[in-house]
Image (tube, rainbow, N blue to C red):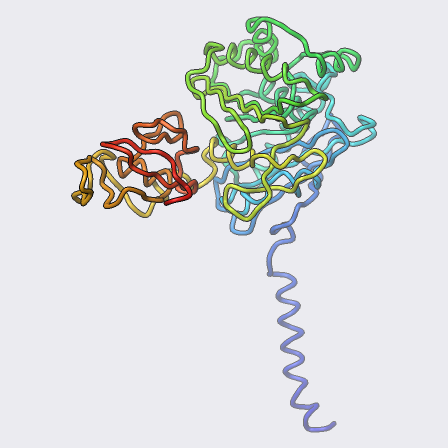
Length: 411
């Protein structure tokens, strides 16, 4: 045997051994991939379970259940809705139920079938079993489970919030419908368009009857809808508001309002129900493709380039790193200046010039702005600056003592 070959054999053997060791002890197969899960329960709704656990998922992480719309599937929603980006960024797990064409010819969740809208049966029980599996096997936090979905997935989100209020901490209904609006396929079309009008109490009674006698804490509810949706009429957003404000014991008059990017208006009902209306958007999940933290998703047939709903929803559920604990600076009082002002005009502003650009959190802690209901407002002008966090940045130009206006061009 040639000497070089004899010398090479131990090296080759070591490489083979290392490869074999890596195959048995390397990263688990689930890492950073959307994975089909079998054996998660009795599965009376005959659904397919997909899950996603980002690399480095910590113990006790939150869990988001995200459901696709009609003609879509779990992979489609996972790829385009933006939820994967924030699962990777902020380290929470995803579960994506998928409907089978054998159950519904257009792959819609059966939000209108009585057997699939009741606690302890059909599709709701299958989805609840998926949550149980994730909590038991992924180590996710059972008190931080959230649910969202588009269209039929949005309607099924309402079903899950009604039938399992003890499982979910919050839900976001995208272009969806009130719980038990329909109990047959024929009635479903009427619910979708033009919609069904009921009193808040009548809608609320339907939810309360889904889990009779339940007296525990109920999940907070967000409602997202496009104002130009002709598939599921925008009137459904109003009916959903009526249903869930009644269930959660708040009035139908917003306690605050705000304007967000993409022509989006937000009506806040005591931080228990929030309604996001996206001006001019058709039947879709709102996305905003791009690399910035607040951007996400891919535009397409049922994904419209308006605003990244997944980002705003994740922050609302406190899944992200927004908030004082993530700021590199801290202040015990947002109204006291850390240094004297050098402005020639007497001012309570801590800035040394007429214009400063910073995060919304920094503006508040420096006394240039204030926050209310999770949103930031410029002092004096009271202009809405968006969410109170360290990611959203604006330039503020001082116009007088403790008075500022947004000026993203000059700052």
